[in-house]
Length: 54
Image (cartoon, rainbow, N blue to C red; front, side, top):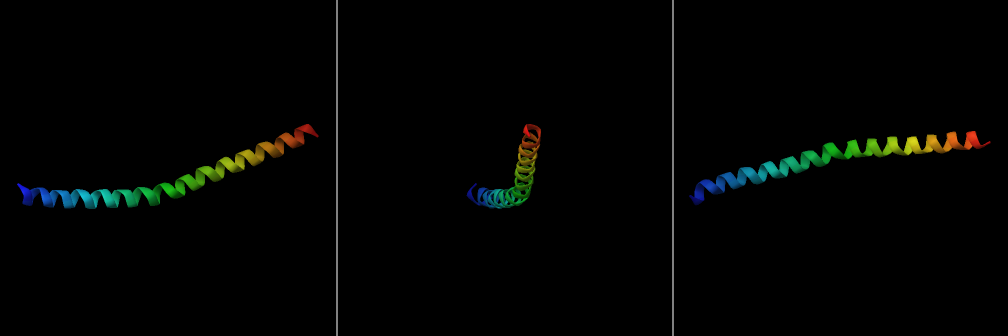
């Protein structure tokens, strides 16, 4: 059974590597956008709060 398992293991390893690579490069821009929107929201809140105080 060793020969069959080697082929399966190789295919599984390739799938894991490609999946990890894909997830990393798909998730990075998403996180960047979400953090950017959060920062903009915080800046807007601070600006609005300062105007309201004056």
